[in-house]
Image 1 (cartoon, rainbow, N blue to C red):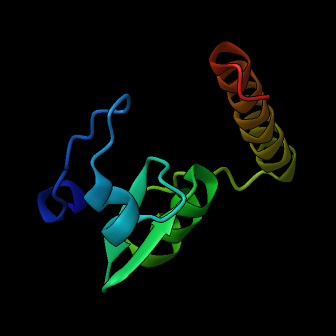
Image 2 (cartoon, rainbow, N blue to C red):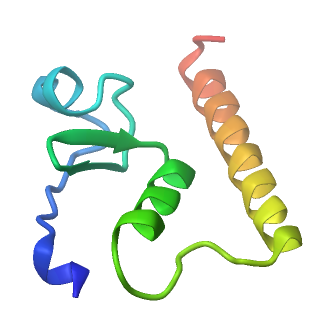
Length: 92
């Protein structure tokens, strides 16, 4: 399966190495996926890309209502995470 074809690279989220932002994913977010010399990021984009390019069970629901709910949930959690981290850092 797909698991046999991937290489996981652990990243220290509190101290991301410079090479990650420079060479892998400039927005410096995780997760990221490199496939065919192209890097993809953002969780929802990765799920859609994996579904479109690899065999196996779908990672994304076929049901439109469930898709919309999943997208809204990801959007909310991304917004919440950004607000929470900037509040604690004093950046915002």
